[in-house]
Image 1 (cartoon, one colour):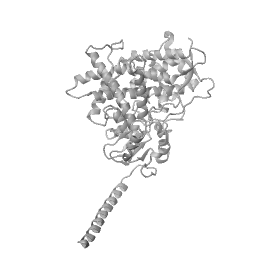
Image 2: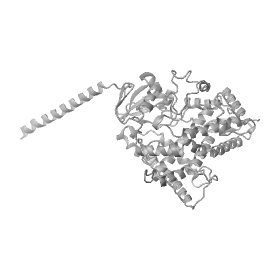
Image 3: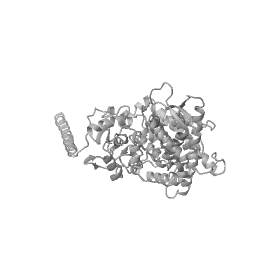
Image 4: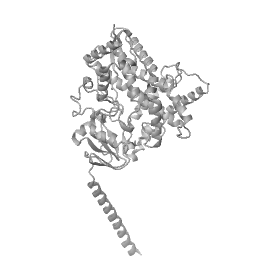
Length: 510
């Protein structure tokens, strides 16, 4: 018996090893036959994660110069393709948009938005199509955006008044960044929820502001478990899981209270805070929920996920874009003067700006475009994921490969942009056909295709009006003692200025 065992066990072991070797050989041969994108060498376990650094868009920009506009990285166990040219972006976001319309599951945003029941992070499928359709047709259509015009005009007037108060004495220093956050947050609150939650008078308003800030920080936090699954335990030890759970619980309680308040108001139990009596986004979502139960079950979690998207995308990226625009305008006095002259000439004797005036300000629109070109708020956009094997620019891309589109690099490509590092709004006056709405792939700060941002019209309306009113009412200068404008970037998926924008604002005389 022992002699039989001594023969069988080695034979079985040898057979298994042979099978493994043959399978490995054929897999290797199959991989070698497939032309994969160029890739930098990687380390065991972490792959290329160490090469991303604190500012991944800048690190990937440097790597793309060496490895090309379509580059393969291994982020831990996750294969990822980095897109760094307009041609490659067009292939991904237009020619093969359907194949690349999925989202990879990212654990922290997935928890925040109820298992990705929102628009931004939902996997491609029927739920996402229905929710996006609601946003595009009902919540963020041109007609709906125009219906919120009075809110934008009122809140930008409040912004101007706050700056006047902070600059009541000569050489007073104003923190423009804080005021922009407040103005944008108040605008989105009134549009989405029907009232402000940052005025200090509403119960829980301060808590809400802090939660929103913490959520944005968490959304940009590196989570090792997303790339190396067996390291998920680290989040229990370092407290990240507990922190996420606490914030998610707080956000859910707040949003649940908002939805319940709106339901009670519909039943006549509470009154609307906003004197306009116009329907806000929660009202519209609840109306859709009632009317479409037979065709699409828009449950409360989906409603809260969409509301959260309005804040996450609406507040954070909108004020960031305006902050960078002002920083560039302030550091280029000749541009600021030209912009002020255009606004003053269009407004004339009215002494205030309306949204109708903005359409007569081509230079202001060019300034906004140029700022978005140099400072896209989310420089790497939100990652996509391939749903099947395909070829892009002759390279094999396997199913479930993440796709990272470096909009920051694409907007600095010298083959499309003359002197790409310069802030030069005139380039958009010479070429008025290039726009940021997803048709020109050399300029995609809001993405493109099925996964493009549906809130472009609203965000631009807020920023253009605020910029025009600021230019009409104030001259801006460096605080005493400051030698130059600080343009350092902060760390995070949304790239803010690292330090607040501090200015001396002097009211202009007419």
